[in-house]
Amino acid sequence: MPVSADRQILALQSEPVPLDYLLNPSVEFRLKAVSALFTDNGAGGDWLPAVVILSDAGHVIARALLPDVIVTAGDDAEVSWFPGVKPSSASTPFVTQWVSAAHYGGDAVQTVAGFSSAYITWTHFHTSDVGLYSRTQIVNPNDGVFLGAQGMYWAVTSVTFAAAANAQDIRIQNAAFPYQDTSYNQLNSKNAGALYGQPWKLVDTQQIVTPNATQKVGVLVQNHDAAGADITAAELGLFYWPNDVGGNP
Image (cartoon, rainbow, N blue to C red):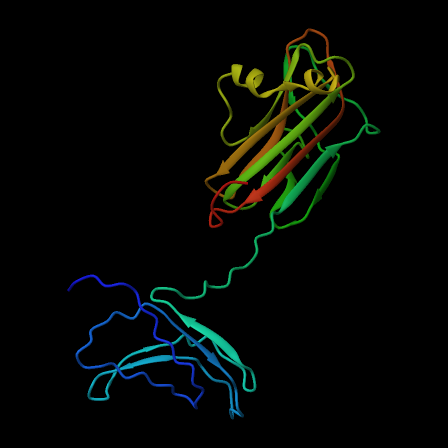
């Protein structure tokens, strides 16, 4: 069939539904879109706008409507129909669940002995979802955060020392999958002195993927000095991103 230009068929008259358009038997065409303006004139109930295609014998070939597109009785409507187009399904907004674990400056100093490592104990704990997050034990009481669901978590931490942290490093540690390469610590432990003029503070960020709902996360401090390292404050924040949401936090 030869290609022909698009043509608009316009019916300006106003009449009770249905508004018919009779196709000449010698004409073949492809319906691409329909638009109609409905004026309610005392309908007895809610109604559905529709396009109905009939054969030359008067039988219904197709009926284009969406059952969920309902016009309330008494309302007018301007409606368009396009092949393959329909309203998207309603979605539930996703709210990120968070946790904040902390060791404040006014709390007792935590000390990591020389040439050793230790998890920070979280003196304070706040969360938007007590069913998802809770304090737990990795080595000592309250030194870990329990992750209660599969998915992805974005974690950020900062640790403040009593003196410049020249011989210390930190890492956000998934207790179920301990890192074997100690050089990893140096790559992810960032001395805030370079950015904020605070050489006594170290920061770390990690993206954690949990294959099951039994993960524990803590902040591990390693001291590479013979003298003990005093920790005066620390913070750990976690944000949850479920598997079924998709994308990244």
